[in-house]
Image: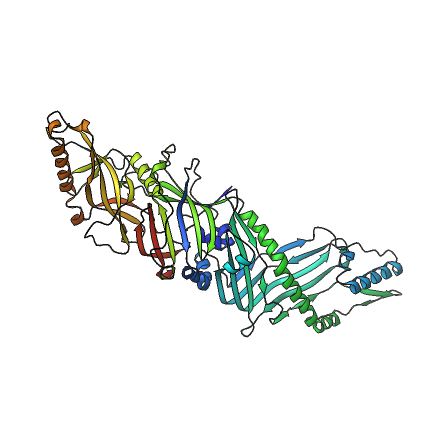
Length: 570
């Protein structure tokens, strides 16, 4: 089973919130039947500096996903114990209480005719409820020290850390009864609230969890031991009305009812002791049951691979082209924590109208990317894109015949006979680059009608176009800007040289090179661009990203060093 996400969000930071995984699991994009996967096509490195953003602004980020944390509402709920409670199960921890309970039950059974009491099976009903939390801190941090302490060699340990100056939980009612002994009636409270923490002693909770990829391509989640200071914080409880069963003693026809006001006074007097029991149970719940519950929920949410699918406008698409856009997807492949949080993603790009098209293996990179151009303390996120992914996009656009006729500013038309191939190239001598720009080369095969007696009527010429990748003005993606033609890379097969030109092959080829130089002479001046673009860099949970630096590395990876946009969360 695959969990799929909304198109405007990047996959990886959704791991930061199980709520996000649930809330965004639906996607309007239809599933893609045949996916041609490109392993490690996208790699992400979140530096220590980048993680600090999640440390201080996680509540803003989750708010951007529609998750409101400072207050919440819960509908009414009822819980019935799965099996009856055997008092002997508590004899080890509370021997005196169990002994007294048995004595009272035996006494009542002996002295009251017809009285009997089964083992208890409680039902608890909680009315509509809500909470208000005054957060002084809500953050997400990495914990490499805990990884080392636990001997974890792969995956990553992250921790949600929260500090609440005051937490108030209120409900319309809390009522309990025993379905195995219904004659005992109901007990509980109406309009009850529980307050924890204050400005001098806030509630502090640290929830660490371990993430790793399993052998089936899914994500394993393990909630670890939770740290909290519940034992030390102020705790108070208020209620409007105490609900107790009606008890009466009848003597010779006259009934004497139990005074509920006195029960209320007794409960008030015993409130500190009761609150200590509540505190003890809350602490045990946070340390034991809560991690188990989170682990169980994680199994439900993360049962399959994590995947994001979104639309991509095909490069070269014309305004009147009504064919559907490409679909490109990301699947979580690996995650690990070693000084930085590193995420590897498998990617694919598919054309809904050309499902049989497969990527070419030789079009991928020649090795792993390097993120060493800029020191880690000088950027937030590094993102690498394998040329295989870009070449796949160009391949599918070519197969749509989007590049069959590429109009030029001089009125001429370029007609491609093979899919362009992008690769690394050194920056041309004298070229000036902005930090948000880098040079690449595009290997192209162009059909031409030269109109020369030394060449056949129609020829095909192969050569490298030197192009610049730059950010679109609206920062919605990257586009290709034509710069020049590397005539030294030109290849012209002998079969395209006519009988008249056979004696002058060298001069004929030089003449073709001169024509190519003439063809590209106006590119820089006229700012020739290829329509369309790549949606890079993506947004992360609604956080816009600014490009700090971009390069095409020699191994064939487009590497972007990114900073969180100065505008912050949208």
